[in-house]
Image 1 (cartoon, rainbow, N blue to C red):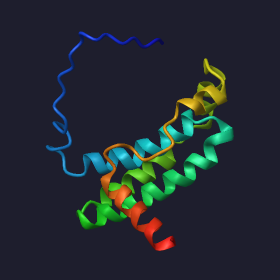
Image 2: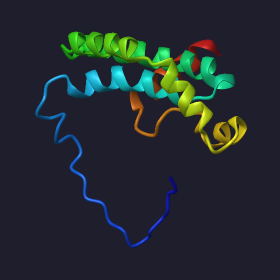
Image 3: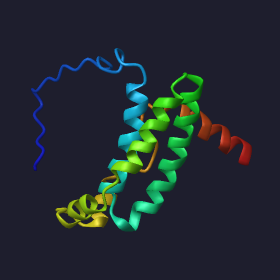
Image 4: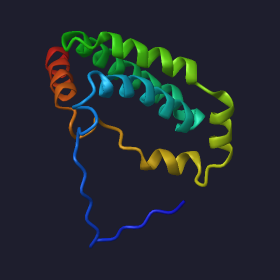
Length: 131
């Protein structure tokens, strides 16, 4: 598929419309989909590097789910991610990629997402302690 930028396009999206109505929805989806997305789409040379960072983020997310009373949703998402992991689907995706592994890696932002304020604070604290 191809993507195009259309400057005059407008998107109207109500953030949280589903998740605000279903307790644990976002927690479950995050714990299930992030590992699957990573496993299926990251090229082999970079998979271990990305998975190490993802495991740290998911562990922190899991701990936060405890404080929010959503541990059961986090654990169910993690369990379902392991159950749904599909090596054949990964192979099919990797076999049909249109760019090289290096081109893919160049597109990846190698930092925390812009809205990850809690993780940024934790990282900043770690840097201060290690100095």
